[in-house]
Structures are given as C-alpha cells and as structure tokens.
Amino acid sequence: MGFSLDKCWDSGYSDIKHNKCNDMGVVTIIRLRYFRGKMGWTQKDLAEKVGLSETTIWNFENGRREPRLQDLKKFAEVFNCTIDELINPTVPPKTGGDQR
Image (cartoon, rainbow, N blue to C red; front, side, top):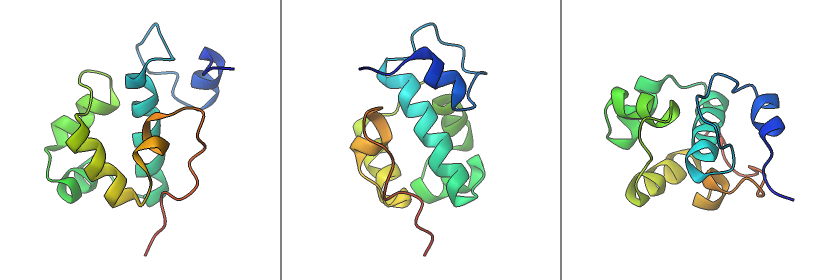
C-alpha cells in the first residue's frame, strides 16, 4: 500500500499545491514541516541550523524546490532522524525531533 492522497490531506497539509501526493517532493515537504514543528522551530531557525536561507526552506516546504542530497543530510542531522524518515512515507518518523 502506497502513500495516499487522503493521508496527505489528513496530515494537515491541504495547502500543498501538488497533484501527485506520492512523489518524493511532497513527502519531503510533509516531513520537513512535521520535524520543524516538532522541534518548535520557525523556518528561519531551521535555515540558520542547516546553513540555508529562509527563502530556500520556504521553497522546499511549498514545493517550489526539492532538497538536494546534501540538504537532506543536514536536515537529518539537525532533526536527529534518518534520511529515510524524511522522504519515505512508509517509514513512520520515530527518532526525529528529540530535543536535547
């Protein structure tokens, strides 16, 4: 069973302007917002932690750009999760968001 459109909307991200919910970009958007929210960070906070601009974070979260592998590595490090947890809709986020 794959990632369904209903899960996308049920996750509270109905503002995503995509017609395919099962592509990696949409999943990454959902997980970035999820982990960032779990940490209580703004887009600016996350941008500073990973060395990107706030605009770039906004673009990732709104589907204007897709993160590169090096960006995903940075996100996984600051969120204390695996890249798989960031991009794979079948892997529930388990480790991320641990506040230390």
